[in-house]
Amino acid sequence: MRQGMETTATHRKATKREWVGLAVIALPCLLYAMDLTVLNLAVPHLTADLRPSASQLLWIVDIYGFMVAGALVTMGTLGDRIGRRKLLLIGAAAFGLASIVAAFSTSAPMLIATRALLGLAGATLAPSTLSLIRSMFEDPDERRFAIGIWISSFSAGGAIGPLAGGLLLEHFWWGSVFLANVPVMVLLLILGPLLLPEYKDPDAGSIDLPSAVLSVASVLALIYGLKRIAEDGLAWLPVAIMLAGLAIGVIFLRRQTRLADPFVDLSLFRSAAFRVALAINVLGFFFLFGIFLFVAQYLQLVAGFSPLVAGLYTLPSALAFIVGSMFVPALAGRLRVRHIMVAGLAVAALGFLVMTQITAGSSIAVTVIGTVVFSLGFTPVVALTTDLVVSAAPPERAGSAAALSETSIELGGALGIAILGSAATAIYRVQMAASVPAGLPADIAEAARATLGGAVMAAHQAPAYAEPMLGLAREAFTRGMQLNAWLAVVGLLATAALALAFLREPQASHTH
Image (cartoon, rainbow, N blue to C red; front, side, top):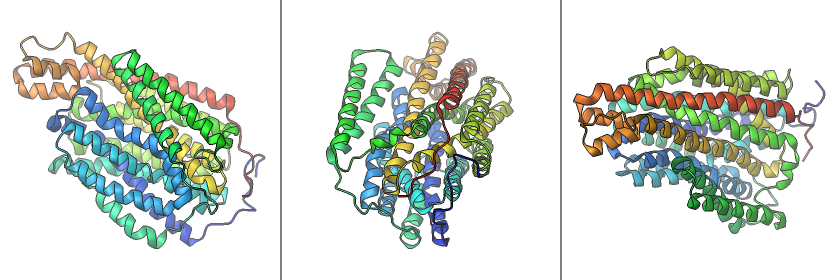
């Protein structure tokens, strides 16, 4: 085996119970991804029924990721202390109940609130499952394969979500996409106690509640401030909120240095591979989430496909993620991690370069090819950064490390939706400011200027103006998509340069 890679000689091999447990772990991951993808498909239906403002629509999408990101560190630490299986089952029950409430929301504020509750419940799922994998699979090669399966379950959820969501939206109201969560969580609650082993830190201390409050407050304040600046421009209030978030974050970090059992083991950041892997996660998912929300809307509101057909056109990219996840362990055994990472980021940038060619009248093949190429390139990035992060931690801190890995992903994704989403919305509004026909009633005209979904609704309410107005609105929407795609090309190439310059092969793991 080449120099610098972990040796498998001193690590216990997984038994049948661990491999069966991995199948159970895949269930909440599958559901987690389904929930994200079906929501994107449901956005046009939400717009028609609940009539959210542009800001409310972004909050409906954003708040889930914001709450997950804010609570991940707390949940990862909680899992280390009370048991990762126990936390996973508590989160599953809460997720199922919150899904039922979300399905029957009667207003945009109610849906935002229930999505926030879903985010808190969802924050228990990812660190619990990933830290269980870290504890169940000590052998590095087996762990990489298990992480590949773990990532594939997210990809499978991404593939199933649009199909299941499309079928539901063809026959039922938008709330049905949330009810689809409930049977999966019930199955997990039945199988988890029977098949999943329990792991926790035997010497864990008590939960430090001030640290929990500080971590959530810091992340939420930072994201909220960034979001307001992205939507409304520089102003004293969002800047003040961001500065407060940074100050709270400094207080949180200083507190960790004084605690006997800190929420975040700051010694993990001494590893260069750990630091660079987290940075790559943030940057990569910033661009992924920043444009994929618009792909779902493009397929329905610009290309004119039904939700089910739109879901079918997103299937190839999800399948590309699954295929790529299966090849990563084999590649990691033959090539240097840094080289695989750089090549993957370059291929992902190529996929976004294809997506810069998407227009209101372009062939659907351009969208499909772009998303497939991106997915194939980004898969090894996700798998290897995840492995680097969780492998850096001792088993008793696996929950904390897994939470940091997931926090970097969720934070990057939420920021991408907020910042790139707001940038695309700003372009849409500038393009539409003088393009709405003069004869439209004021409220209909304002809705058309705000979002593409509003323009579609305006076309139904004022059919005489429909054709020219929709043509202008779709062109404005795709220009925002093109901007995001160009930003992703440049950003991913810069991330590849970061990986090439600073990422080093992991040293052999210590036996804990």
